[in-house]
Length: 275
Image (cartoon, rainbow, N blue to C red; front, side):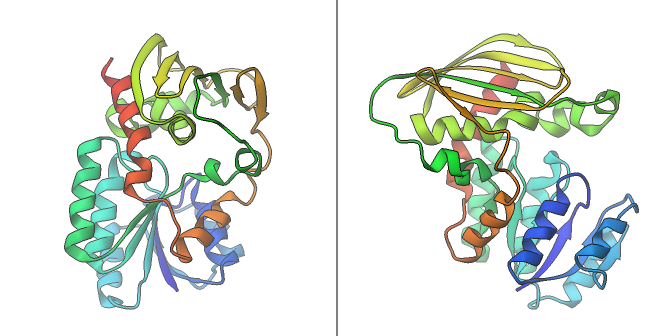
């Protein structure tokens, strides 16, 4: 399969590695920042375009030969780039969060039907070996989610600190954890916010089968991912190494996570933003 890539920043190497490890080809990529030498270890022959307009022209010349567009652009551009991919005649693989609002999901679903193409997203925690081994029953649970991932002062000056572009901290670092909660416990019913600051968000989410206390932070000295169900701790700080590759394997085999899989976590993050 032939891929192109939009966005060559922090998370992009995981996608490119997955393209390589699944035996596929990256034809071209675009990013306004030209510090992209890391690509040499994967696809040194890939065409690079600092300007999206020239990338767009190249891709339309290759129309029909591009099967997938991997999208690692800033969150607020995911919707338009996924639409662009489908209009190109390709499927889209979008880094989380898929989009920022539920209305965007509805628009993408319409585009899928119109173009007969698919939009997939990366919900790699669902594929984590420690998660797969968890057996849950249809009863009420008490759960706790704690995710701390330190960020330097640059964070406050980047697009990630702009709520209109990133969706805020809960979306930036929490969306895949809220997805995991919805995956386990069903649709959410209510949300209570204790703290909603630029560097910390905490509160409770009431799901159909669980009350979940959450705390998300970019403070501290080390990364910690903790998922606790009925006082049983599931440490998720390790085991992340190949989850993007596993995600791509699932997508390429026709079993990837699509729009409806992402809907509940997008709804939760949107509600937190509105409170």
